[in-house]
Image (cartoon, rainbow, N blue to C red; front, side, top):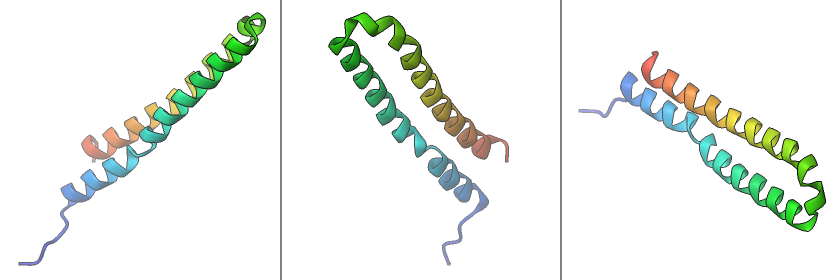
Length: 79
């Protein structure tokens, strides 16, 4: 019998592909906080000014991750 890809199998593959950006988000968050702490370490006087920028970068990066996981769940459970 031939191996035929079922709709359920395709959904699992699509959900896995939709979750791939989560690896990029994890790397980006490490980079954002690493650079943010490095900048504060070099110039402690500007920590208050950099806090807003660092938190905004964190929020935008997390938004991409949340969007990716929502799309993956929609592919799995809403179809």
